[in-house]
Length: 318
Ligand SMILES: NC(=O)c1ccc[n+]([C@@H]2O[C@H](COP(=O)([O-])OP(=O)(O)OC[C@H]3O[C@@H](n4cnc5c(N)ncnc54)[C@H](O)[C@@H]3O)[C@@H](O)[C@H]2O)c1
Image (cartoon, rainbow, N blue to C red; front, side, top):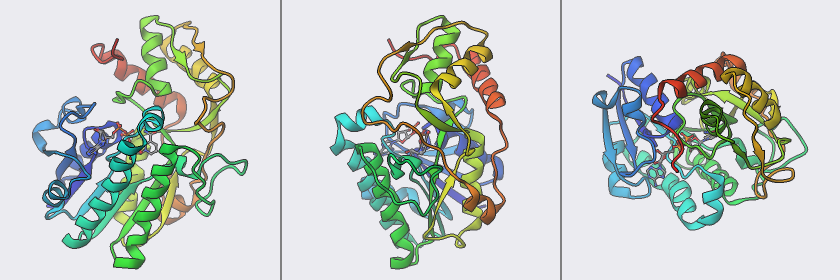
């Protein structure tokens, strides 16, 4: 039986990925902080089927234990929020950058055959040249973006330097049921609309993003894992290629929840430290693996709305 490690396995994408790996028949280990914000393994009903190691991905002893015997490693653990990154650069760089090299060093010494690392389209930084292609320079302009650019560059260097078969994902904005990060647009909007609460939107509604359903994100991880060592040392975008403004997302969620909630638009343009417009060209991944997004936005939102409806106890704190 193949053995797969998912760092950040109690998080949003990591939980969905653990479930897919269990369904694939792998023996799955999740590494996450003891006080992880999420409890994705329980939410997915797979807590009994996944070995959970509670610890910090920047701690070498913990990571050595987690990596032992792994055939595939998916590195998703990170401080993932833009606001907290700006408030705590040191903690963010420790988790996201030190955590990455600690994990890669452990993989190198253990001789892991496939490593897929989560960077982000945020690593590209603000740009007028859209959609981003993988040969677009990384020009991070804020802390979270910088941490993901460092993750990306450090990870890719392990193939030419050490022959570690590692590839990097640059995913667009991922959404779907099970995201407990309520400072993100879609979880906040859906839960507010379901509860007749006024959602707070940190912009004037104009910023545009490329929204990828979590099942398509998981499929991208699995496709890259299958492809390795082909594609080692490379980065792959994954997204729909279709940008949507925050205002369009608001209208779509009002329709999906059959609500007339009226968000409070809290700033002019984008919030400082956030990018105005982002979307990716995913043709490199499509050509290399045959991957393409399968879930259109309306269907993906309907899935997410159902999930939050079915989990009324899961709502933003306060
Ligand atoms: N959600 C998105 O839109 C998106 C888009 C592009 C890239 N990504 C990347 O995908 C990955 C997963 O994102 P997500 O949306 O599931 O985020 P998430 O915040 O839900 O999950 C991240 C997990 O990492 C864990 N973690 C944080 N610091 C850690 C540490 N030091 N040691 C061990 N575990 C730690 C957290 O407890 C959490 O469970 C991240 O690397 C993120 O940067 C996410």
